[in-house]
Image (cartoon, rainbow over all chains, first blue to last red):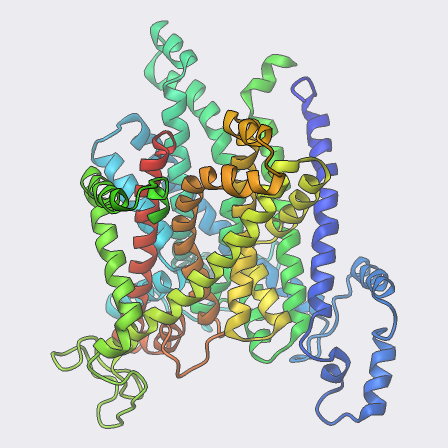
Length: 342
Length: 295
C-alpha cells in the first residue's frame, strides 16, 4: 500500500466504495419491502377492495419473487425513480433534489463554523496542557457531546430571538420580505452574492446563522477532542524533538511539521462527525423549520409517506458515502508521508 | 461497576473489595464522584419517580395553564396545566428504559457476533465485518429513522432501531478484544486441558475482555439516550400524553417563541444531565481501565 502512488490509492479507495454501495442498496430495498402490513393494500388506499389491491400488487410487481423485485428496484434507482410522494403527488426524487441544497448549505456552513473554532482550540489546548485553555477545551468537549441539538437550538432561539431580538424569526431560509436569489448553486447566501444583492445575502446569512451554530456546536466536540489528542501525540514524537533541537522556529515546528501530521487522524474522525452531523441535521431542520430534506422526511413520517422516507434514507446514505470518499481523497492528498516516497 | 470486581472469588472478601475499589474510584477523580452521585440520583428518579413527585404527571388543570416556575410548581406548568417537574421526573424511567434495553441488546448481540468473528477469523469474520460496515455506511440516526418508519412507529421499534445502530461499536470492540487474546497463555492452557472452543470463549476470553467493554457501554448509554429522545422529538415512538423528555421538548418548542421557556428547557436540561452523567462516568471508567487512552 505504502508504495502506491496517490492516483492509484484514490482509485483503490473508489473501488472499495462499491461493496458499501451495494450493501446500502440492499438495506434500503429491504426497508421499503418491510412496510408494516401489506404495501399493496397501503398504496391502494382505504377505499380499495380485494380486486384493486391485487391490481396494485401486480402493477407494483409485489407478486413476483423477492430477487426479481430487487432487480427492478435497482433498475428504477438507475433511472432516478424513487417512487411518488403520497403527500404531494410529486416524484420523490424531485422533492429531494429541490430541497437538498438547503440541507447542504446548513451542514456545510455548520462544519465550517465548527472547524474554525475546534482546530485552533484543540491546537491551543495541546500546546498548553493543564492551563485554562486546556480546561476550557475539556469542558467544551464534554458539554458538546452531551447537548441534544434540538435543545441547543431552542435555547439559542429563546435567547437570541425572544430575549435579545438579534436573530430573525426561526422560520425557514429567508424572510418573506426578500425574494429568493436566482438559482446558481442553490446556496442562498452564495447565490445572492453572485447576484450582487448584498441585502438578500445578509438576510439569508442571518437566517442561516443560528441553525448553523446549533449544528456546529454539536460537531465541534469530536473535532476539538481529536485535534488535541493528535497534536499532543505528535508534539511528543521524535521528529518534533529533532526539529526543536535543530533550532527551527516555533511556528515552523508547530504548523509545518506537527500540524500536518496531527491533522491526519482528525481527517479520519471527520467521517464519524459527518455521520453525526447528517443525523443531527434532521433535528436542527425541524427546530428551525428549515426546508431541507430532513424536515421533508419528518413531514413524510407524520403522514406515513414511506416512499419519501426511504428515498431520504437512501439519499443520506449516498451522501455519506460520497463524503467519506472525499475525506479519504483529502487524506491521501495531505498525507506528508507520501511525499517522501514519490 | 460490579464486573470490575467480579474477579474476586471469596464471598466475604468480595464486598470489602468492592467498597475499597469504589472508594478508590471516587477519590481518584472528583469528577467521577460527582458523576456517580448524579447517576445514583437518576436511578432513584427512574425507580421511585412516580411516588416522589408532588403531582400526577398526566393530570390536566385548565385553571393553571402555562404558569411560570413558582414554589407551587417548581418547573412551572404546561399548556394543559400539567406540572412540568412531575413530568420531567417521571419521564426518567421511560427514557432510561429505552436506552438501557437498547444498549443491552446491542451489547449481547454485538459482542457475541464480534467475539465469534474475532475468535474464528476467516469467513465468519469477513461476513460480520461487511454487515457492520453496511450499518456504519448509513448516517446512524437517519438509519434509525428509516428502520422505525419501515417497521412501524412503536416504542419497541425505537428500542430495536437504537440497538441496531449501536451494534457495530460492540461488534468491532469485541472482535479486537477477543482477537488479541486468542493466543494468550491462559487460553492455550484451557485448550490443553480439554475445553471446547465455546467454553474458552465464554469463560476465559470474554470475562477478560469485559472491562473495556464496560467503558464502551457507559459512553454509549448517553448516546443511546440522545438518539431515542431525538427520535421521539420528531414524533416517532412515544406518543403524547406519555411523559418523555424528547416529546416534552417538542411540545414546548411551540411556546419558546412566545417566551414560555420552562416547557422545553427543563426536560431538555434533564436529558442533557443524564447524557452528561453517562459520558463523565464513561470517561472516569476509561481513565481507570485504560489510562493510555485518556484524551
